[in-house]
View 1 (tube, helix red, strand yellow):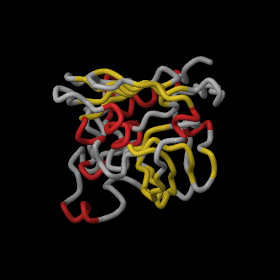
View 2 (tube, rainbow, N blue to C red):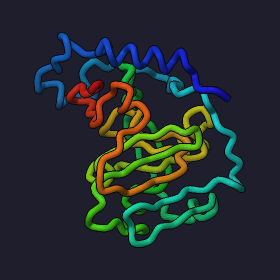
View 3 (cartoon, one colour):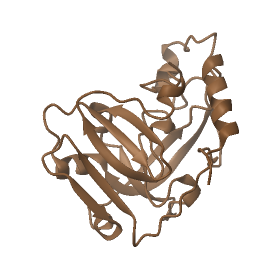
View 4 (tube, rainbow, N blue to C red):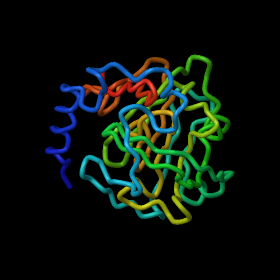
Length: 217
């Protein structure tokens, strides 16, 4: 399958136009930081699908997750090995840069902190770079991933994570806009230097903080 060129072009246009920002790019006052819904967002009751238009077929008997880079113990997990890790259930919200949010999603998966514990990042590892089976990529500071609610999820609301939402496994970082959570995650690399990902080189923020309305570069 080919990438959704129309969607990519539209999102690049949004970035150039700073679409979704309030008051010409000025975030709302500090009151909104105490609100559950970030500024410029609206709540939806479904979970819209938004991606590059590629939904890779990933049989569980061949799926793997590789963790490497600046770590003491690089590893690759099969599906069975991934499920054998400590499983955590969390309920968190989900904020998309295209201005919608969903509340109270029930996730199940493996904490990113467990990934760190298993891999043991070296002291010079400061950033994390995610790549996906659809050739997507994104990046975050290590400190953003080292949080109690960052999860590699494989179940949503009691069911296997749907393929169109990144199943069998995607990353979710609740305190960042959702493009920072790679669907169909394939590889996690710990790096010394930051490496912008797919949308970050196409006009989107490198930090993606919803309560700062930090959508675009």
